[in-house]
Image (cartoon, rainbow, N blue to C red; front, side):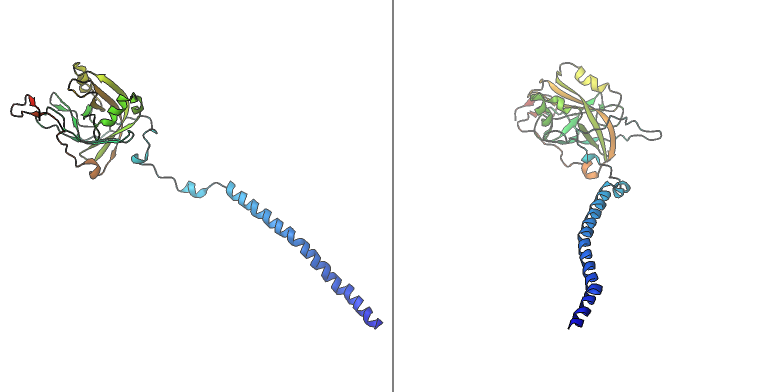
Length: 272
């Protein structure tokens, strides 16, 4: 029996005790390994976030289209003079739009009917001075468009006029579409309220322009003799447009309560 105990003690000292010590040491190492792994993962994460995003650099953002550019975030004015060997076609204006007004202004442009005494509703029209139609954006002359100060026409301009907010128009874009599917873009640079039609300079000034420029006009009152608001815009550039955008379907209509004119000789109007 004593001999058996002696053999067991030697076995314990030579085999069991070293194994137990090794297991204990191994158990002690595990928390350290776990903690070390956590530190490694955290550092790896920080390293990742500190790296430049190569994918973003290799895939540049697309250039924003005109429609996506806010009216209050505009580039500096640039010349629209054609380069050597190119020219801008003489195409008539078909639509005028200002996205930055509230509500947005978006009106078809039509030719005035013969002997017109009262402008049509739901459209804008253009002036003809000394047989020259001021309706060809991009050419070395003014494009002069006018419409009633009513909803669906140039009402947004009149609303800013009557509330003394005309200065907010400065810098807004005006788009004038033409029959050859082009979008001529202008930037408003001047607002001229209180223009009297008894002073011939109201039309002489735009008629004398010898470079591409846009003029918009609407009335400040209900009478033919009422003062006018003129808005002047300078060219930024020209971009391609779709046929649908360049050819609106609206052709205008006779305004409610518009005077009925004697078209036989083109003079005089009678109540409807």
